[in-house]
Length: 329
Ligand code: NDP
Image (cartoon, rainbow, N blue to C red):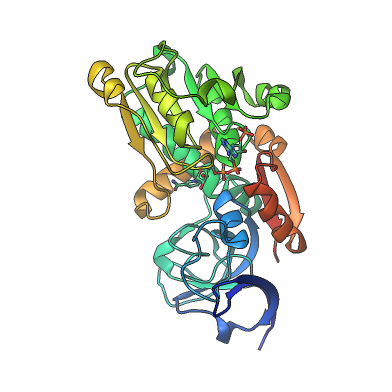
């Protein structure tokens, strides 16, 4: 039987986490109805948390981390997929409770897969990854709320991160005046190249929020949570909305009801993990249509299998800029 390499995260009796690269065969994989040869993956913030053990992302031991994969179907008991089909997977607990992407082969449920969207390569899909897909879900949530670029600016926090860079790129392409919030103002030129019209130092949004601040934007995409999100809400124009998807600053959110009851501001929660298939397919179709490929390439770094662990450490330390594609196969 074919052997392939996989990153295994393990835990000892004292719950200390360790990592090793193991040689596995298909027989070692968990249950599923489709076997996929993994060609590409990526490193999201969540993958960084899983590999470093900084937060309890992994909930089944041992685990092969990696929440996103693109590859080719090897065998399938799901009638939706046939050998040779190119497929993409985001989320569904893969890399958390089900063996994930950092392996030569993955066996998953067909329900979790979609056919690779037209117009994007497998590597492009991983350059987008859960981070970029989540950015698109945020954009769709703001659109469903009825917000348009003509109504005012949009603010994006964690601007240099995976979600932030793709959100800026998408929103600028759609005609929004994008205000990028970052702790790395030295990257202002890079953020401008993606389409940011203004760059705001994260420090300006990191203090104790007032009940209400000066109205500065009609829409927001928040990837960091905590004080930054509280300040974003307090500075959102009446009837505006902030799509909240992340916690890079913290899980906490201490705010008041003032933005909600005095300005009609809405907080839109985004969870990319279990989005129904029709909405997933629609979000990927919008990514294929709306994402500027040159800008996607400019915000993407390519690494090999052996660089996954270091990159995972870097991403939780806030040192990774943009998106990372991993060549697996
Ligand atoms: P990245 O690490 O790529 O980006 C996070 C960015 O946040 C960093 O680049 C940095 O941007 C900023 N940041 C880092 N540390 C801090 C800090 N201590 N305080 C404030 N800002 C900080 O992660 P991703 O873009 O992949 O993910 C962003 C967030 O979204 C994560 O919390 C992730 O878990 C979450 N997420 C949630 C999903 C969902 O389904 N809800 C799906 C995907 C991601 P800068 O240097 O520009 O300030």
